[in-house]
Image 1 (cartoon, each protein chain N blue to C red):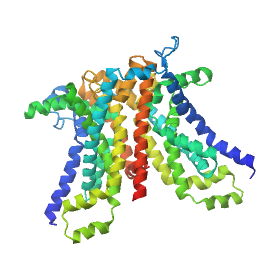
Image 2: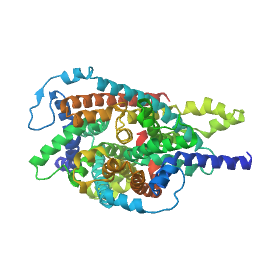
Image 3: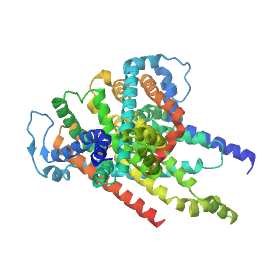
Image 4: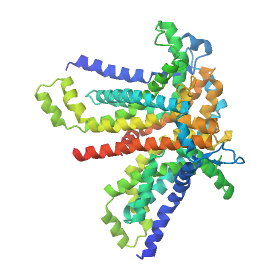
Length: 279
Length: 291
């Protein structure tokens, strides 16, 4: 193949990918333009890069509060999912009886249930629980985290279970038991470190899912101060669709954390998505 | 170790998660089936009236529901075609021997990470204003007009945005499939003098069949359950012309306050999703055995 033709194909591929991402470009450039400039030419670069709309959008969306809420809810939920699902999955994989099989099959079978089938009774039941128990399940961060853990447990248990069965050598565990290790010590000191590759996958899949989730938080959180990023975007956008430049600045703000995450974890994300899908 | 101790450890490891799981998934699921036999407006003080299977029988004469079912099917079929054609094309492009493939791959996957709600808003701006302005500037007003105001085109707009979101995801799965094809086969065909098109048609695409099965069913299941993009891009409009299943159920329950009737729709929704997914598992397993 000639060198020049290869160079052209390299450039064409990049150009094609850039065209594919052009909506992101349109979003960013128009977040800097004033109204008149925006309507003159939506594609052109802005004449000046003023951060005025960003400051306005941050203020009106309560962006820092929403970012804090999203970070707290996502990180806490994922930590609980990793700890509880890995323990459960390992125990189920290493216990060979009917009960253990039934529990595992139930986790898998319920992955089929779409959220819309559960949402109304879930809210009713959480409301009832809040009346009976001394904890408030609705309209609290803790309650939302609890529900995120419940909804994402099935997938995580499934992934961990498969990994334990296929890659963790049982002889190592037996040796540790003979040496007098308790089950708890055995799991945390020996098994859990070996689960690292699948833990990364579980973290990636759940971070993406929980960070972007809109419907569940919209049903459970009513306080303005508790809103996550998708929620505050929803209310902000409803109010400011007339002011596109302000709206685009707000959307750009919400995309920034995702881009940062992508830059740092790109390799793991692509691997995790592939594994999560095929199984 | 004694039997009692083994049981104790089993309980300690599994009960915390089981408790959460049962209260969040299992109990609401059973309650949902129970609710679907009642007529109720969701207000605690108002009585729940037992109606048996009436809610389910009523579904078939509900034109809004039947319309929603039809556009969901139409949307899913269109999305299946566009997402997979684009996904496999991307995968073929980024598995070539070029140096820029990694950058291109990363860029093509990017839209999938942005949440559906935000994606829908970005495209709402593009369809409403950017398209109009581009149309006026270039004269191609037959293509560049506000798609979201036209009942036919607004469904296409939804397919368009969904494709933009999902093509990169399917690309990742197709890439794995292409990389799994043995080099020997490709080299043998090159020695025999096969052209790129012959190789693609006679070797690569047939060997990609397992990836096609996975991707078709994944797209099917994602498209059928679409909610966020639907809500933010069109909100179901204009005049309910893009109110797909998931949004329809939400509106029936929380918008119209038909808790019992809406829940019956939600149960039917579950049955359809489960049937599709189980068919997928069955076909994938059968194919694995044959290969």
